[in-house]
Length: 253
Image 1: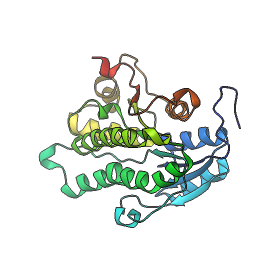
Image 2: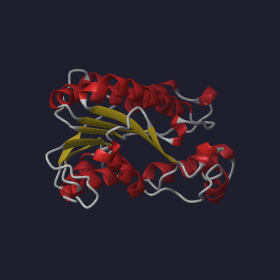
Image 3: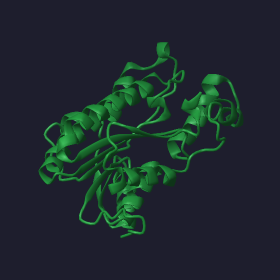
Image 4: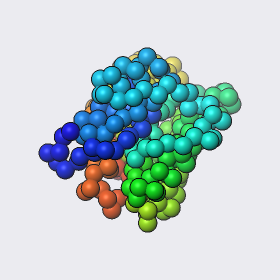
């Protein structure tokens, strides 16, 4: 357990979704390094097992788009990090309705159901932390991402409602809003964006993804994980219904 900066999480159980790679894996490593027992949740069973083995945690292979299976779930989790997500890049008139519905199930309905499953335990213990990995797209919109932007805006509202309901019971709820992070999801977007914008992949990075960022680089997953850790720390006990924005100045424009 690391306690050099006062963020000891020994005795806490943390659920991290989308934790087989990218941001989720970095968060799982960071929270485990602080002493938490981590439930590594991902549809990728092998990936979840690998990360769980690395951090001394427990894998949970689950398809979070099957929201009916989550309706009666109960979780003894002290920390829930809603991170799982997918992307689809397409104009609204060509956007497949079934893909739109799937993205909202995964990125808005599933976080609601996981919070619903964990809150009774958190309320009983008088302590809980819900951290939702939103996005700069939870604050701003971009063309061709109607489902993703809609889901992230909805997640922002859900977080604030949970914050109000949990405030007098020791539970906080906040969003972390990264810009473009160096993850497999973003790497796949480069080719998709190149297609819809008619640009080369190199041009997509400079002219589309980082166009509005004052800091011209991709964010690292570990930087997002450190923001999550702060929100679980005693220093953030008064922070709820709020955002940590890691967008390199994008939303300052």
